[in-house]
Image (cartoon, rainbow, N blue to C red):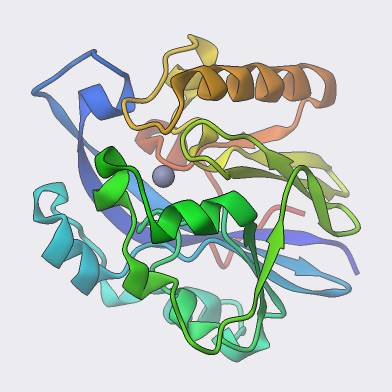
Length: 248
Ligand SMILES: [Zn+2]
């Protein structure tokens, strides 16, 4: 059986341009997509991120005008490919911002992998990061987190690339498919514009670390020439394959 990668549409948010490209475009806004990645692997079912929880986002970040139809929830998206939340073996969080762990509560049976420092930061964020994290989305009494550091191989062909900067413990995802590698930057680079022009996003824990992660990703892209997926690039997102379609 080949490894397959599915993108699970999760709705969208409104963002000021200056948060997408630091100090540029303040006052103009753009809607940005949110999605999660499901990997069907011969050795297990892996989910990378879980999008946002509509109720929490509307309550805590109403200015982002979150939109998510009933079709765009994780259970419905997984259902399109015949998978139930209880079937997921491993849940990985790129980081613990609200729009990447909003449905974590559905996966209590799964091994939940997250960077050690990311979990610590999420419990006690810097003041300028408080809106990004919500304890109710990741702090569950029955959750036995598998805490990792550095690069990490989840299963053969599923590699987590340590790319801090946006947050302290951020991971990008590299999956080796029959057709070649797929690189999902996650929030290490929100859009093509960020990476191609070294234009940092306006939301970051450490801008210098973000720039180093840009360099690392660009080196990886130059050598491996992967299919490239950005998390919040509306123009590119139109061209991505979305579940039930897949990359293989
Ligand atoms: Zn983020």
